[in-house]
Image (cartoon, rainbow, N blue to C red; front, side, top):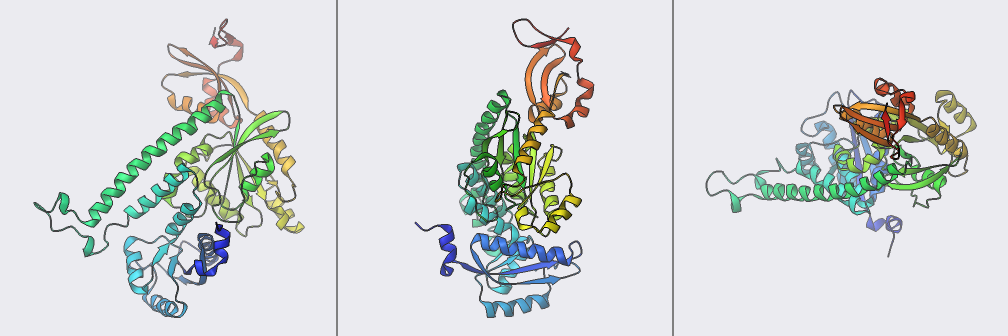
Length: 441
């Protein structure tokens, strides 16, 4: 059986693609060029041969075709010369823009979102991953059913045109919505299984680190280096979709688990964020985030910002984060010194040479040691804070009173201020005989 890499080596198996970028006011020329370069990497990851690319600057996008009519005519001539199998636009196209461009250029037209969805479909291996990707693809398709021409328009209307008389458009929409409900049910069942496993870790008071970062930053390599996990590592975008959790031994005889998660990217399709929210819960419930950054990237800050935007969107923006600049073996000594000046709190690592791994483990252990054990009394009306304690801390014990809950908890330092008014003086706490439960005297 041939591997994906062997297939990519056989040019006859690959689709030929031509790339198009259009940028206007909000995006500078340099950023647009970087984005188009990233689109090339995405296309190659999807299994395409890139024949070439073009980038147009406009004052504003054309509502019908995104690009201007003159540039579109030039592009049509390029199509005649290059003979690509498809066109890929760096921007997300509206359904009407995609339809108009396909008609004008006479080749299939995809946008950045469709391309990323295709890569996810290729790399999803678990049942949950496949269901999440299919859900995202169906949501994307659903937005593109309307306005596809008179062949899909409703047959008149009124008596005699409903039920068996519904059009292909309506049949497609109904089938997609039915499939989305089925997938949603499957994902909820799979999410319950993962939550059960996480609750077991919580009961055992096992701290959890989550690896986050831009795609291809080296998260899986770092997981292997820290845990001897032997996870398959590929130099591809989005090579890891399914979360992988492994135990890690830290200095001071501390044990924790570390979870590798899906990589992020600029303009990550909203459909994917929504579909992968159940998987990304592993990030939301982590004690500490390990934000892995490719130190050799020409746009370190931009990629870090893209990751942090997604973290904010899923509710993980306030979790204690350690920044790790990986792949420093690709840097010159001068570049390393510059990074240390600009980002003094970051840990520099190389999974290839092992540099920085011992320092990182020490920092991770110290991060756990900084957690505080407190007694907190929460009124019954503060369910939000109770949920926060279970998400971000370790609830060591819980005792119910008429007017609230008394909890012994272990929390990160950065949560102390938020809970300060509910902290109970430890001198007022004793253990109820024979139960191990705290109560206020």
